[in-house]
Length: 373
Image 1 (tube, rainbow, N blue to C red):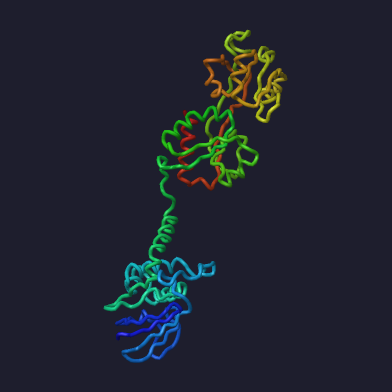
Image 2: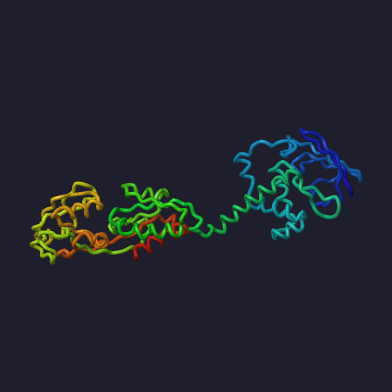
């Protein structure tokens, strides 16, 4: 039958007609019945000229009547993903039966979802089509369509997983905490690889602080490069390289440039790099003590950058990792020290939160490549 209706709400009054009516679209409203329908109070009278009186409880939240009240967490709690998918299907299909089939649910289940949507949005959302089976979205439903597509699109992308990282387009800033010695060894190749493949990305080297593990967890630092003895059980790790030691002296040193024996080694003045500053004992001194020997450390510095400069202008010698000293082989004479020293083991550490991140995985590969070169 064709039904005439009169809808009243605070914003005004509208009169029109719809038909034929699918019972699914006007559930529970029988002739002479007064109850809730479409989020409004409805009254259907008997007969072909039935009138539906819709008394709204407030202004319709559409372009003509202005926005409704702001949604709060209570409103959001009423919405689940199934409701949003039902709204999407109805907007696409404009037919209850086809929308239910699209969602692989029964027609009654979809009708129940539609009733909940009508309550949430305080709007009918869909009315029966004027001709044939189907429904027509209300102005409010049409307004929701673009926002709905955006929300569901973001949810689908979230479930699908992160997009493939593209270093060419990335503008991310990567932060690596690294001590000076491995930095001198790794930075040239690391920076060259990063800037050649990700020209818009940025890289910051920072000195490791005492709270470096907390900063890794907070995402303030991407990777920590340190000695193997600085590894932390809660962090992911990968060995980068092992390094032996060499002793260095200036060109033209009074002792000559031949091999060092232990007596001569202990008799010379030594330069030591103290990471904490001011120290005069280190790895070499521990190895000498195990042999019942000692040396004289004449100069203690806190930075590797100063070592080649001081050595070039003094008669001190210094024992440092081979990969560092090889960069100064043209300015300094290098020779193996006359005692066994354990190799320096350098590792990369990162928080498990970054393990599956594509950008972080790419950064690690750049670091591994630099370590292997």
